[in-house]
Length: 372
Image 1 (cartoon, rainbow, N blue to C red):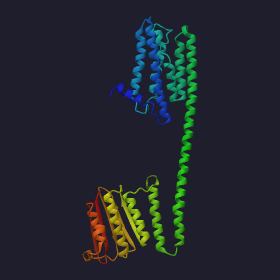
Image 2: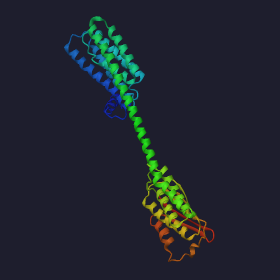
Image 3: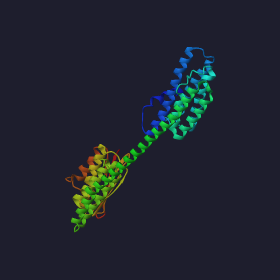
Image 4: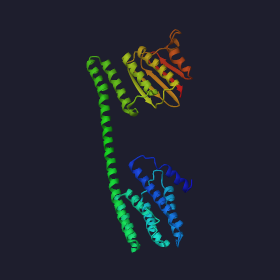
């Protein structure tokens, strides 16, 4: 993309405001653009009236300002990060000083065709900093007075205008920056207060109630352990889920199933999860089969602890293992539908598979797998 294309792209983004400093930088770019337009209109009027000994000086002044505007736009990023750099301010200063002398060089000292270009240069510098604004205003005032006494009144009025602009704009920008800082501090304080309130509410609604239940069940170690494990999982999910929300992902679904099995069957389930993903149709079937495997282990294995391992990826796998009494898979009668229908058959319908390894007296391991 050429310089003109980039220039138009920057100009099209001029009204998009993200923050105060970015707004100031875009205002600086707009000031350069307005200064150029002002000078161009007055230059056309000056040339149209005729009687200009050296018209090329007028054209050169406008062309230099236009070229600089396009170059500055083309070399800057989309956020105008270089709009108020020292180099940019220096170029603005040189062009403004040349514009102040251009009428005299053109042979028409009373035709001030540069318009407000120098004044807007002071505004651009002030956007960078108060010191830069005052410095540019002072230097341009010296250049203005150095042109000679033939237009002393005009020169003095321009000096006063430059200094007044620097003073007023410095004050306005400082007020805006302080207001923005105060607003950001207030917003940060509100966010912190909301976070503390959310934590306090969760602790009250969940943790404190669970502690009260544990106190009432102190004589029942199994119930105490179940309550403690459930609260641990809930706290982990609340702390590490985005925004504290428990999305119904495959991992969240399995955690809910484990919590339910522990509560209903008073057994400890040690859960390990690697990865996570959305709860697709095939994964829903995997979760349903996994729940059946967990319930069977809790009801029939006689083990006080069950292990579950979930691995989520291109292939999602779930392992359920216990160190209970075990059984002989070949001896399971055809009237027992738990393995055949709820586990193996359910996964087969979605293209998955189930593998059961068990030995009497050595426990059982069930491996479940689906694609996706």
